[in-house]
Image (cartoon, rainbow over all chains, first blue to last red):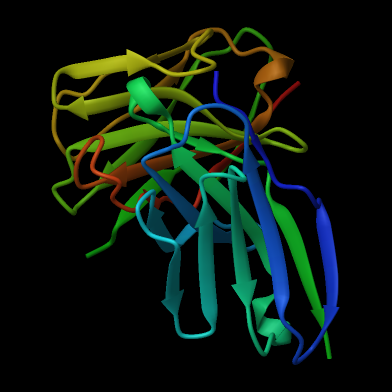
Length: 112
Length: 114
């Protein structure tokens, strides 16, 4: 079965720097991959989707890449701000089941 | 639109009690699902529904029942609560099954079973 790993449980960076979060998967290449943001005590909120035939997707200060050879997606936040502090979840297409499989998340802390 | 709503926000149950977690969406979404989120485990799918009258099991269905009599509502029933069911429960919906569409999550229900 498909497995997802988000390599860091926690990432601490300085305001203004670029945060880079990693999501690796182990088996088949998913048709798409999604990234969500989750704040404490709240449900996840969708940020970006990238499909298997897309190398890169951007939305304002966010950028997602998808490398099917490395079986990896990178999620970048440029010019990070303390308000970007949250847990970021990677989710991918569950294949024949058609459901999303979620990673455990990376908790990002941006210090002023 | 209210989006996805869940009630209650918090609940404490004793072992063996039963209860229903409510979930409703007003976006006319076909696909609805229930997840549980535990520390260090991430979100795990309990049950899902691809439309009214159709439900199926996810990764961790044991101890839970669902039904989908309308497009809007997707309640989750705990039949006989156990301490292992202490968790935060999220309901989610999306426009279409297998469409890669974004999932909209509710605010969650924090359940403690003593």
